[in-house]
Length: 391
Image 1: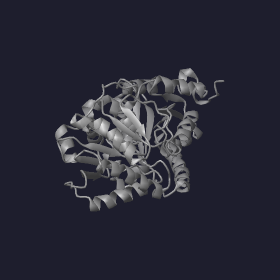
Image 2: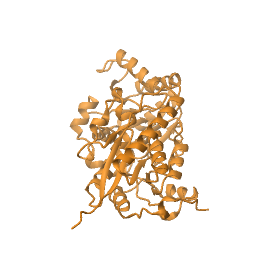
Image 3: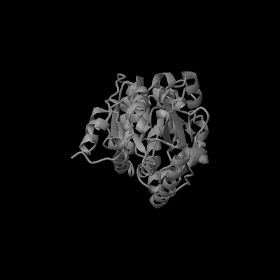
Image 4: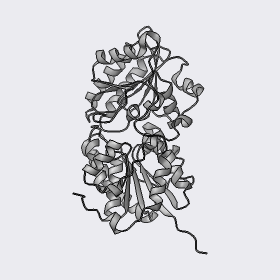
């Protein structure tokens, strides 16, 4: 009997966070009898200053299929050069791996490079989290550019699905599955004892995750200072600060964090709470921190998507997540210490921190099997690959 040929699905990943939210989906692909999982690592995974997270990739079990270099960049022009170089190398790897479907998520430049290389190579492109809105740096433009390069769409919400169709995508290409980042979220979160070891406390603490909203490191250093001043002026005794991603401008945030870490004792002082800085954390520890924190402060997409599943209050700062759908657990403010402090006081509620019902507009935590099933049964023919705008 002839051996059944499996369809090669290649996931291209550029960050720890992106890989983590797709982990359950990658597991579903790897265990599907009609699919073979490939993973190409690039971007922030290769950055030693962020912990070289390529070593944390668990799927496929035999290891990553390829590594595509992505040199550190200092500005937008450098990002453009790195994106073009990566696009050429990704096309070469698709050919070597005999990839059938390129799977990408979100709005980062790595996903754009992966989708562009696959589309021009004549491969099927499947896009997760298309149709969302988020200002970011160039996030909104890149997300919708990836949409036009893609053939299968896996949006998280009904509004995102409608937006894809309004962008001219055929309705039969659009499959609302929810956010893969919610799959197994409560089971995957680290135990409270492990979280306490990272946070340094079994009591209440703040979690801070701030990414750049501009490519100017000087501006971003000032913004990081504003956020930390609010944290230091709050009633909280402890805070955990996680380093930003590697977008242009992030060097300013990191530089400020390192300066504060040198001068601010981990054990705390009369001038403010104990602050622990972490360049990188596993997905399990991150989820545990989001679950156990009194509040998540900053502008991480986890505050918009995952935090609602734990009922964790979120202080969303600045324009990075502007346009995203959000639950009632998210409050927004600008880069003003007073505004941030006012929201933190409300959340602290005189020592009885508020929580929210565990309701999440981004799905039911069952995205992985839906995505794997559709990738397996899609017919990779001219009707799918040769797109014509639907209006």
